[in-house]
Length: 282
Image (cartoon, rainbow, N blue to C red):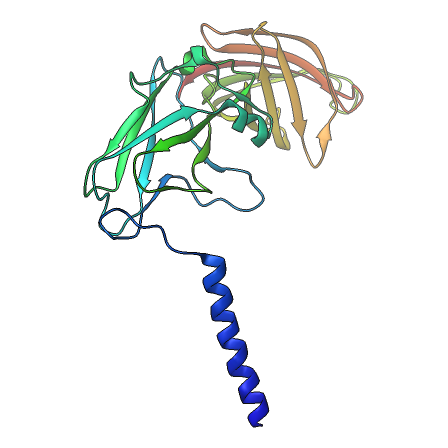
């Protein structure tokens, strides 16, 4: 029994010694206190993502501010004024991927200085980027990479020195609509055309340039997604238990008054439907 106790104690001593070697000496500030970590304020990242990611949904406005918050994690705040220099990192967006496109310089405006100051005793400072959502291509998913380039004190975080802002834009087509439906006779629908109107039909943003309505023609369960293209045409994808292969017969959209009409068939032409959407508000 004594031999096992000695072995157990020896193992504990060895582990403590190994831990000391692996951790290394702590980093200290000139005043003798441990150095704080300088990091971007982002949600916790996982090992499956190369960078921390934050999603900020944008309104369709001329300017929307994107606050980039930098933290200093010392217990007592920054030991002195800490100068932190930031930079845009398009390469990080490429590495992140996920179908995103790095935001072009024409889509945002940076502050006059790339350096912000975390005041002595404080723990945060904010760098404000002016985004221009109205200049975005609504058919693309945009992201903006930001990184800490340097800091005058503290240790720059390994996991949170670079972050990705996902920047989906709320579709201008999102809102409430009056809709006129016309089911054409034939196939599985009936022997005469059927027409009816619904008010207050909601379209919600489902992706870049895509809005979604509940149901298919307000008749079948599921959903219908409309891709409103910049050439004033409309694409349709419907789901009712499974994705319905659709064929567009004709379509038109008006970006000024946010109305569109689309005529399409599905289930190998068994059903043919024409829908006219007129936006009435949010």
